[in-house]
Amino acid sequence: MEGMRIQLCGMLAVEIEGRRREDELPGRQGRLLFCYLVASRARPVARRELLEVLWPDEPPPTAETTLTGVLSRLRRVVAEDILQGREQLRLVLPADSWIDVEVAFRAIHQAESAVASGDWPQAWMSGRAALHVSRREFAAGYDAPWIDERRQALSAVQASALECVGEARARARARRNRDRRRRALRARARRARALPRERLPALDAGARVSWERRSRTRCLRPAPTPAARRARRGSLRRDAGTAQAAARRLAWGAKRMKSATLDEASDGS
Image (cartoon, rainbow, N blue to C red; front, side, top):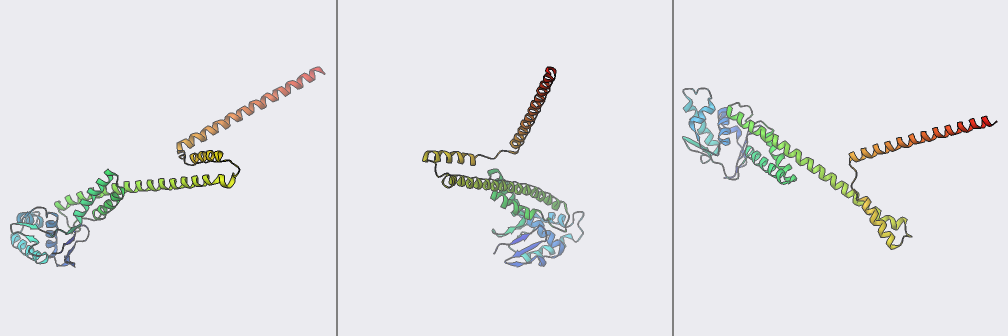
């Protein structure tokens, strides 16, 4: 049998052998039972447990008969060999089946492992896959304690997926910036190596090599950090202030000397 595709988050969707079959599920109770069996397919489920799923408070007197009819109609949709058992039921899907909730949990595990190992492209892809599923509501339109538990688990998946995607995006942006700066520095180095041949043709071979080495070192020197730029600007301001103060002192001294000379000239006359 061809693998099934089942979507439990958001709008319920069931694809069996290439055909959409969710509209054939037996009513609201059949959809709820199907979601529970898919979510619990790793273990057998007792009929008593299914009764509690359909009637959490107190089952009616006809609960067993109603459950038998719902399960019978459900078997006609998914096939007898898929829904196995009578007292202990289990949904046995083909090996290549696709279930969105399981895909989300596998994807977030891969994303977290990729973040730990520094594989940022894989972290971004797996995180996006987990986020695509976990951002939709599990079993939309239904409310039950077991549904709330799975919604909380998917909320944790969504939070972790957002962290993985954000970290991968930040690392990718930093890498692009580093590559851009590296390309710019290489272009400057190429232009610097070309300058002696264009502008300084009279240099001998030894002077040309020395000039190229100094230019390449200067062009490949890393750019100063913002803190270094601020410190440099502060130093320039302090130097300018010191120079202005010295100029004022010199002007004041010259003025004093001039006035003293005028006083002496007037006394001699």
